[in-house]
Image 1 (spheres, one colour):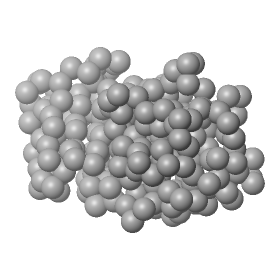
Image 2 (spheres, rainbow, N blue to C red; image 1 turned 45 degrees about the horizontal axis):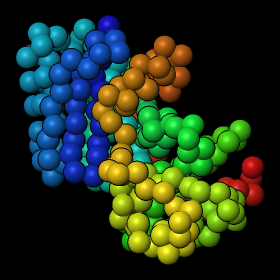
Image 3 (cartoon, rainbow, N blue to C red; image 1 turned 180 degrees about the vertical axis):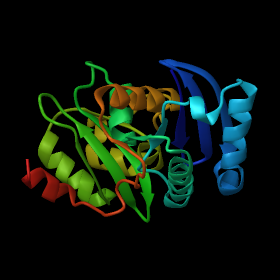
Image 4 (spheres, one colour; image 1 turned 135 degrees about the horizontal axis):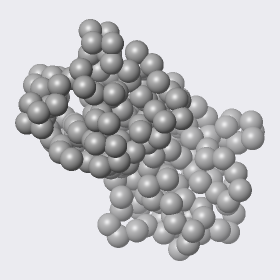
Length: 227
């Protein structure tokens, strides 16, 4: 079964062609050129591998969080393809994928931070025996709420937001903050594709029109109060 997966990072648009759980080819493009080249790259990728759009089972797409302009371009494009060709879209939550991709029992408390700009962060917080907490808020508010939650536990930080605000995090957490070297920046295209395949097999988050995630800010302390 062939399908496409599209990942929007903070630097690039990445389009991958999959055969079941194997990534067989991909194209990387500067995100600044995404709006003018995404259709051309999809066409080139399919022609190179002698696969037609009609033979695809679905398109897996990162719904965010990601830089809004790039994300909007990708989602508008795949929505147009789906409308024109009747091709299903499978939405993928980038924060869920990022946490699962970097799961490590040695670090039960893990925070994924992605830059939401203007000192805001998209976050996902993994802790033992509880659901992953996610949202968007200011870095200061997030760290204050996190300290209340973990107290003296060591926390692993990943994501481009963790790298961007590493000094600030270290001032707040001291030696209780751990940063892998190198710091993973965002989920990989491969894992985005596998998450799309999993959703397809479970018949989850399949639509013919998809929307971006996390456009509305969510307070971290409010999310904790709702647990």
